[in-house]
Amino acid sequence: MEGRTLLTNKALNYTLDRLAYEVYEQHVDFSNLAFISIQPRGLPMGKRIVEKLKALVPDQEILHGALDVTFYRDDFRRREEVLVPSETDLEFSVEGKEIILIDDVLFTGRTVRSAMDALLDFGRPKHVELLVLIDRRFSRELPVQPDYTGRIVDVVKDERVKVEWTADDSDNRVILYSSDQ
Image (cartoon, rainbow, N blue to C red; front, top):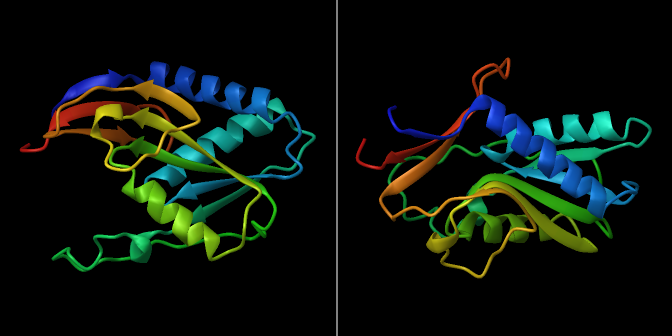
């Protein structure tokens, strides 16, 4: 897939470092904090953020889980392709916890709304924040704003932003491409 590179591997790593430091500055005590990655694309990013935080605070336990929102989406019955849900992996209670939802790209806000609905089926958190790598701020359909943002990107409706992760983190990048490609 051709496109314009928005973040190179080096820039992406710097951005993830900054996001981890921002979370650390806001939550010095991680005892009541949990990170939940929105499946499927938020999981690779969530794992990297949690790894960076574990390096910053090796003496604190950091809870991390994954949440599938497939059947909470408002468009899941309108799609023609068969939906294959991802795995929800929450080995902790969200009841009374401070939660940071993690996703790669914030577009319309519908995935985040779905994640909030899904999250409430597991309990009532004390507080929920949103961490995203890319915020497509002019594409919002719902009043959703991130608390932590890696990069704000202004794109037109027919352009897409994709985060590409490699297994060994040697060539991660964020690209912008036209949706007709």
